[in-house]
Length: 315
Image 1 (cartoon, helix red, strand yellow):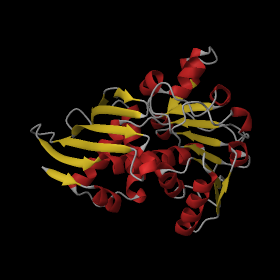
Image 2 (tube, helix red, strand yellow):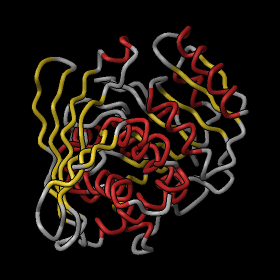
Image 3 (spheres, helix red, strand yellow):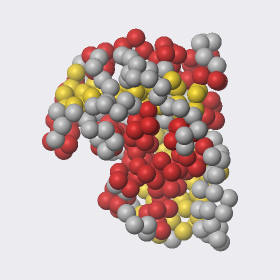
Image 4 (cartoon, rainbow, N blue to C red):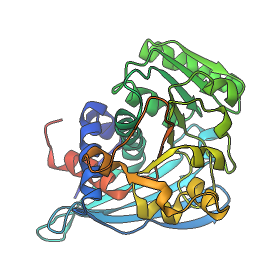
């Protein structure tokens, strides 16, 4: 059995490789070509979760599972909050053939998925990016979004202004783009064209009244029913697109809060992003429309990345 460690994932799974790969996986999911179960989440204690995601790239294609723990306290320790493995099985024999570092795959493919959604839904002239959060996903999203739009500036907000400033200094050096930190979310999004929410917040940090017309928002941080990074008003005001309709109806915290409040129905989910990418449903309809992409992540994204690494596709 082959073991693919974190460094190999980081080196080979570049955004140039991952973004089109994730795009294809999203289209395949929405076309019903893949197989997957809803993720199972075991709450160990506050801020400590274990998730199990199983699926297949097709009935006769590679299949497997991701076993992933999410420990929010790891950020303070300087280590990944997501720890785990992606296990691949041979589609011919059913034998396990590969174990890959799930934390690094998750970090890269989640940002790649947001880049795919941004490319499909953000205005073509969108250049000002705001990151709410300064952890690993903020880093990967800055890198990935810059691959699909000519980002002219980045604003970052986090609960610690000092840490936000350190993040801004580090990313400005890496990307060669002006990056500045601000103390208030309202100020961070005031002039944004693209916003990414990338926090572990349980209650909303981003209010719909602060989001200007024409903005695209990637809602990423909340990964199970309960936490919500954005308020009901933003859900209601937006053209709401998701990675997986079934997953969001079961586990999409922001949508479920608005639905439970009686403000939206299931029809408010206008499409899966794969349907937009395939041309089956219109994405952005005007320059003034606010679009939201709710990302929960699905195992087909992980399997596509891990299988490419294992099979040695040109990368």
